[in-house]
Figure 1 (cartoon, rainbow, N blue to C red):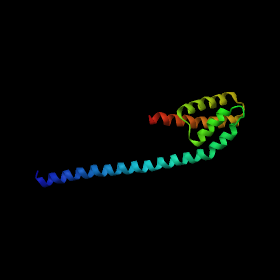
Figure 2: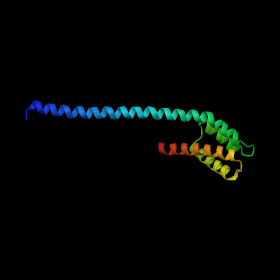
Figure 3: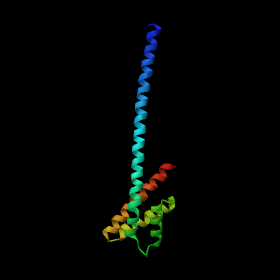
Figure 4: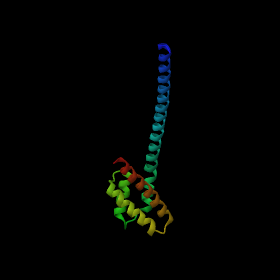
Amino acid sequence: MDILALVAIIISVVSVIVGWALIYFGYVVKTSTRLTKIETDNEVFWKVIGPHMADIIHSPEHTNRDVLVEGLNKGILNPNELAELACLLEQNISENHNESKKLASALLLARVKSLQADHKNQK
C-alpha cells in the first residue's frame, strides 16, 4: 500500500467522523432550542393560570397557604417553603369537598412537585 492510499483512507475516516459529529451537534442544538421553547411556554402557562388557581383556593382561614401560593406564582419560594406548600395543598385536596378547589389544588401541587424535582436535580 502506498502512502497516497493510506492518506486517502485517513481522510475518508476523518471525514466520516466529522460528518457524524456535525449531525450529532446539529441535533443537540435543535433539541436544545425545542426544550427552551417548551420551558418558555410552560412559564407563560403558569403566569396565566397560576393566579386563577390561587383565586379558586383562596380562603381567609388559610392565610399562610395563600401567602405561599402567591410566592409560588412570583417564583420566590425556597425549598422549605415549597415543602410546606406541598403539605398544605395535599391537606386541602383531602379535606375539601369542592371539586373545583380540589382540581386547583392538584394543579398547584403538580407545579410544586415539579419545582421540588428541579431543585433536587440542580444539587
